[in-house]
Length: 267
Ligand SMILES: Nc1ncnc2c1ncn2[C@@H]1O[C@H](COP(=O)(O)OP(=O)(O)O)[C@@H](O)[C@H]1O
Ligand SMILES: [Mg+2]
Image 1 (cartoon, helix red, strand yellow):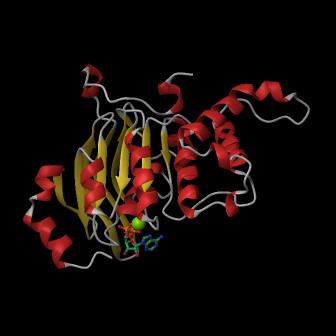
Image 2: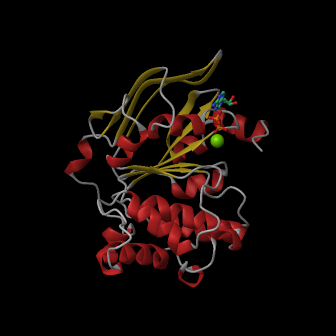
């Protein structure tokens, strides 16, 4: 199996394919009753881009991910994935087009082993459905895929442990591994470092940096240092709006961002 197939790889230079944005949001808006959680967000993300979303708690980051992945419908605006308007598509249809995500709260099946969780995720998008009477060999490619993800994420030793028995940091790694099972082209990671110790954060950071450069990665991250280390571009949200957007150097030196991050408690 090549590096590309397992979801890891090395960064290559940009190429001509980078003309159609991976994702374009046009005036994307979400109201919850009287609360405008996402307010007319317009932005464009290039294929392979590493883009971090920052902003205080309640800024609308998770809601934005829920809109992009289709968990919730937009109130207004458009979502265009690889040139195709997906605003009206259900989340499973967007998943089939190559969007995968992790959630802020862990979303694993606690009584199943690490390997079983991975296998189910690999099976979910495969055309092969489990049929009890078929020999295991029929699922060989799924077993192989799950095993490769396990190895890539350094989870080999935990293969047969029920997920509820492994550390929180390892659970978060399993979640990122699960999100790659479907070979996504666009990956949304909602605070994968939240609640991790500093060594677990470092380990997750290394894994994220090893992701296949062809995969576009959107990351929600509170920590400015982690964000600056990972991102090519950063969008800072505040009260549902884009407060600032740019390269990491532009963001680092932006006075409004400094005020929000240095002057306001962002937990
Ligand atoms: N399902 C919902 N129903 C009502 N209000 C919501 C819902 N989801 C989020 N909100 C509100 O939308 C705002 C943005 O929330 P969220 O997107 O979770 O922010 P963030 O992820 O940046 O912390 C908050 O005020 C939150 O309370
Ligand atoms: Mg959130």
